[in-house]
Image (cartoon, rainbow, N blue to C red; front, side):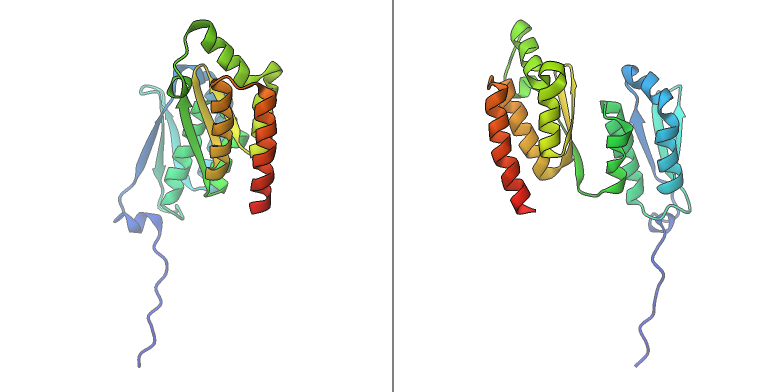
Length: 199
């Protein structure tokens, strides 16, 4: 019986019949300056570790990514696009870079009006409850659920694993609906203790 043939794993450009794959990520106006400042921190891991070509298209105001012949894995392109997109949403490079390193991370976004329709003063107070004095409520939720939260006006973005995002989102929704921070903290303690037992 002849020996089984052994084939080398296909490279990224061979899987797509040698076609180059592209991704484009729009740059909102308010993230233009932060992108300029952090460009090298974003460029280096994408180009050197993930082996993806990246450039800033100034005319279209988009970050363009494409695969190279030596890109080890096609999924790297989508990971890099997610990384750049997370930065555009307002996450720090240090936090967003985790999307390149780990597979089980997601970004979840929702608006305050998805939870409850609030206007004027009520909306301002809800945003105030979410971040707390000096941002301490937001930090408490981030640290206990191992997530990162960005509150951009009425939009909320959460970066983390699926289970952790759910816990963080539940806490934020309770705050929007009017629960006092103390009540949310005690609920968080119980839930995170359960999460810690599970893993």
